[in-house]
Length: 267
Length: 267
Image 1 (cartoon, rainbow over the protein chains, first blue to last red):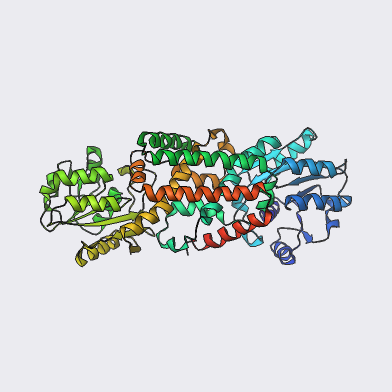
Image 2 (cartoon, helix red, strand yellow):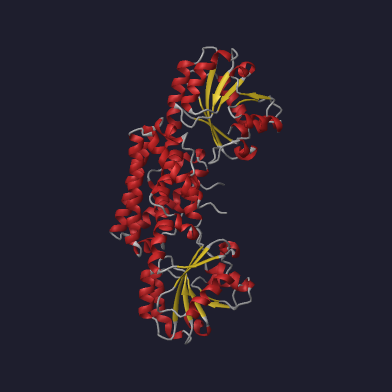
């Protein structure tokens, strides 16, 4: 994610600096002229107008605590975190009063990580969600919109933290739990020779970053558990229709799923 | 499926005839020179060396009962049916002794139907499964292999009817039940603006032919119900790990799903 942001900044002649633990990644970004400076010394943020964190949620909060003394007064802090309620609460509780946090979620993650997957085209047609609170100024929300446009996002919208986390619980987190569970039911890897696109599409996201997702799930536990339960109930309703050989009941389910899914087709 | 077969036969200079109820489809296939003759009169099969049924399972059995008097002695009957145990039992119980049935499953279905989706490229990289029984001659199995090669399939394999139906219950039928159920949990169509590739990929097959699938599910009820139950149990095991905030337990599930899913990546 961070690397793709650098590539866009380069194209728009903005000055991007990187704070990255991995020295090889810094060197790669410098060699490609995606960034003008980089390193692992947090004091490097002192001149930044906008600081974008790509850290995992808990690390993000901890990092702000330890390093906000380097932030420029009037700087804008943003993020790419996949859940928002707790992050907003914790960051706003910690943050210096002369720095503003505007929460953002560029919905363009991939099942790969690392600078070698930097792809400036990744953001086109993806959603960029801004999650303003009553603490935010109009200027900060406006800047987040501009940043999203510069990064190439065409679909930019605003949600409350509650709306965001509820939506993410269904569209993203439940789908990942389904994909992971489908791969874990049993060792079916001997079926690879018979596998078609349906199974591959359903399980693509079962390749998952195990260091990040458990934390995101726990931060949205209430929503995700409700979604898993509701999905599980629906699955068993379908099983019961099959058990009863209720052809019309199964047809009705399929007609409804077909109608709804058509609305999700890309135009 | 049938239309894509016609297009291949045309390329290989074979003489394909079509028995189709839809007169517009026949005319379209004739206009494109995909077939040399077509209509809805079953007696047209009298000169055919190979008869390939693309009928739904029960209609297929009924059609054979009513029309096998037109079959040429020594003809080979095949099909594209998605389940095999019951179809094999019923067709073999009905079929004239001088005609041989070799069951085939070209795993290249799509969520569209109709001649306008005829795509000769659809079979490349798809699986063609031949399901021989102890009633089949070596010649018939060999012919099925040749037919699959002519149609452009690169992955051709043989399974018993039991192996086939078990595999299909997991890889294809369970995945369709999951996709249909995910769309039916609740009306989430207002979330379309926030939807990314994960959700779209998982639900692509929720657009489903409601006239065909309930019949296929019932014909494989034992396997499919077992698969739904096992998947549901696994889903709830994951939910319990989340409920207990068991980070290591969730990580272990994700490491396993990532490892297994990598084996399904196309090389």
